[in-house]
Image 1 (cartoon, rainbow, N blue to C red):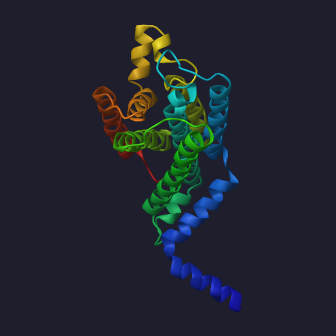
Image 2: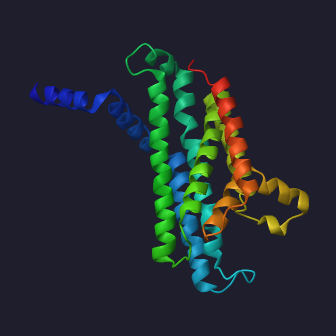
Image 3: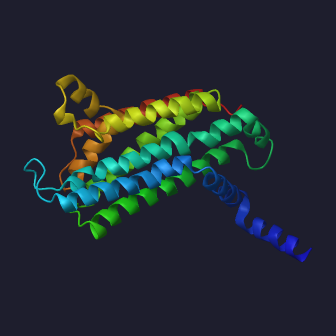
Length: 258
């Protein structure tokens, strides 16, 4: 009885939002598919490109940088995509389909706090990804990037833009089955457009333009320049801002709790 009272007192001290955040975190760790794509996959890519840079040192295209130097922004953006496209919409669509979001609207918690908890939780996961990639690339593999104010700004804007894509998926998908299909297609499309498999300079002008002005391509372009102390292209920044505004409007317009 004393133990039960103590647990109840701890919950009261934490507050409803803190308790909700704790529960959502446990659920996320029980179904870690999105976290695997958002955290584990970038860590693996970091190790792969880091080892390539060790065994094949030297300049890439006379740029003065190793292959890892040039792929750090791409790896971070891939982590954002994995979290935003898979980890973020899954619980929201699941809870809406099961009717839990509708039921929780009658409690003090409220559905808006559920959404806020998911955003806070996944932003924390994204921060873990950034720390792993940056610390691992510099400390373990000796990457030479400069994480200055331009890089911080570009990374925050990229994260904001890509997370809004996840909210659009959560808003538009009527069921978990359809959400999984949409997320799967978007994940690989955004990976391709980010330049993971082929760089924009290696393709024709039309595809190059599509890649440069895609959500993930614009994010990588802005972060790549700013990672080495260069002011990011205004076109890349403007592209992300436009996407963010559009995605925010769509998510707000079509998101429903039941």
